Image (tube, rainbow, N blue to C red):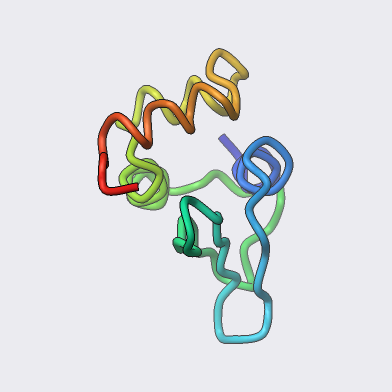
Amino acid sequence: MDFRQWRRTLRNKLGATEDREGDHIYYYLFIGESDHRVGKASHSARSSETVQDYVIADTARRLKLNKSEFLQLVDCSIDRDDHARLWYERDPSY
């Protein structure tokens, strides 16, 4: 997966907001009544560069998914509603 796919998944598929103000680019997803940081990338990351495995794993964990489920989200096998359902099932405090 390249950074373009990773970013598109967070922004377009999940509706995460992008914060480019600091040293990194942060992605926040509004769930329940609060924002959750769900992604972090370097400003120097190029769209065509391959996303490192630890970034994929961290993003998946923050989205309450396993790595396989996150890859399904990228490939459109899981949609925004499926993700929300999984989030609420795995963290019933929301």
